[in-house]
Image 1 (cartoon, helix red, strand yellow):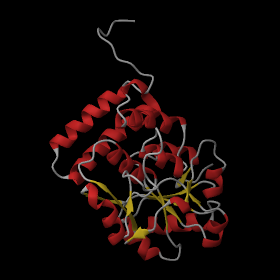
Image 2 (tube, rainbow, N blue to C red):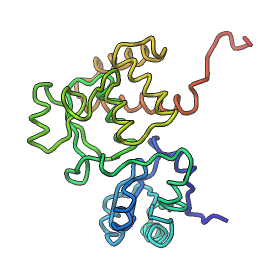
Image 3 (cartoon, rainbow, N blue to C red):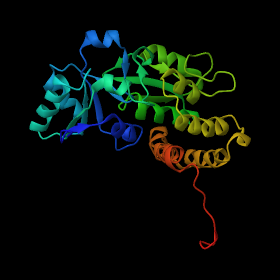
Image 4 (cartoon, rainbow, N blue to C red):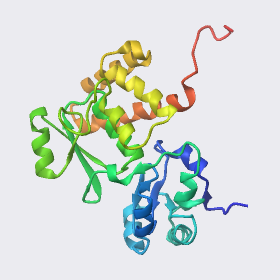
Length: 270
């Protein structure tokens, strides 16, 4: 019988990528990470000995604790957090159990940019439309929930990246950008190890809208219309980005659970 504060990999898979996902805290020992340098999507690393720091970092948010095997480190920390009034569970089987679960993605640690003040820092062109909102959504939901994004003039992106040690994206001649017929969103899915039928379905819509190839996906025209409308509604790029996250949260659930659902009128029609 599972423990009351135990979560299975399949249960966690249903939460990852949604706003309801708890903070995923990886407390695997450094030597075990060196032998298997991957993270569960959205997880952040934290030393198991720094409990006060973790409590501060969580700020009362629910957490899922992950260690190598789902035993002493994650169970002990989950119990400690619970004693502090923080909703906490541990992942059944830990990272090894996750790796053995069919379809469970793993993010290579080497692909995650260096952190600035405890989070990754990214920079791109201002007035975002499609790729420049889809990519921040992907990063926040699957790579770094606390990531920060800077929007600046196109001519200043690379200079700002250099001065502030930020990672540039969706501009020419940088690593995180378009590659051939594929857009930056595609690049991130590939590099972060997030490929799946669900993400490919979503990526096709983003790519079609971002590259003006609406013939690739019927939903692309709608995404473009909504994206242009958001850019007209908000002057502040940060506010526009957060509003856009709601759109991509909905598109993700469509791609995962509702892509084959239609709608018709009248309701009595077969």
